Amino acid sequence: MRAPFGDEEYPAAPYPGARPDVSFAHLNGIGAPLRPDRQSSAGWRVDHTGQDLDDWLADHDAVPMAKRMPVLAYGSNACPSKITWLRESLGLTGPVVVLRARCEGLAAVWAAGLRVVDDQRPATLMADKDVVEEHAVWMADEEQVRVLDVCEGRGRRYRLARVRSGRVVLDDGAVVDRVLAYIAADRVRQPILVRGKPVRCADMDQATAQGLVGKRAGGDGLKASTVDGEPSPDSWPKRIFVYGTLQPGGEAWRLLEPMVAGRPRRASIRGTLYDTGMGYPALQLTGDGTVPGWVLPIRSPRRTLSTLDKYEGLDYRRIRVALDDGTVCWTYVWTEPTQGMELLPQGWRATA
Image (cartoon, rainbow, N blue to C red):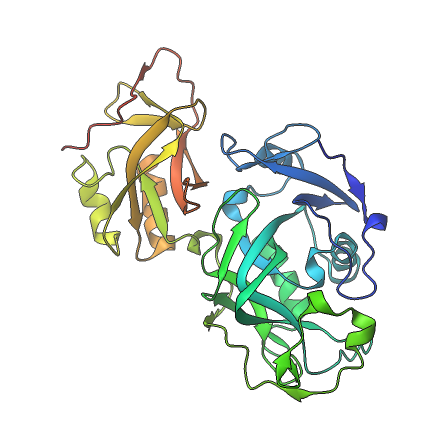
């Protein structure tokens, strides 16, 4: 069990600051370490109390994990003291959830120019197929992304993009495909090349990096698409796990089928399935069993999920779950009691 820590343990200077070796939730200058738990609705628990992270967020009047979006923090934004600076200087509000991430094929490197505010050299992101680095992912709510936009100078210094290069894997094994990240938008933030090669932040500290002499790279090599407007938490992931009436061939398949963008594949998640006795099943993430179903790629997540939210109604809650292979999907879990319901160890019948 890891105890909470204060900002003083992780100073912000020199840039990019110190970062914990654990996932954490940050509020009021205190970081609460987190541990993975796939039986919780958030997928995480506050380590020192055992509380479901979603319940902890609700206690602090904050939105749950399903209403947050993954933003890669490869520079100073993983530093607790920097998060407090964002609160004090830019009006950041609410708990910040920061999850450790293993980044394969992505590197934080020193940029070609210096920052105007303090003459320190900023980090920038680039593709590098031979590199594996440890960084972090903010699970940010919509207002927190707006603050990050201001901090990063979105559209001027950095652009917000969905990055398809590399592979980002969280502490719980979940794979964050198409992660949001602030990547170079101007010449200053392009990588610096010294003797023709970029310089990784992991290989050189800020004091030495300030004296680098080299040429500006012509690009960062990233496969990325710029985000127009404000990103939505519903936009990731672009797939759903179904286990009941929405399965291919199921009673409600006709509702979902037009929104499916590719070939369904069979899969299962950990949990327990019950027969509600009302013509549809109830999924809970408890127990040691597995629940069979299908993973469906969806064409327009926001429109599809809005339709399914109405179909599922108030007895279900939409959350993200990670399959054993790390694939993250939306699914709906039952929120009411299951006492007296029959178990369905073989899953729900999928015929209309």
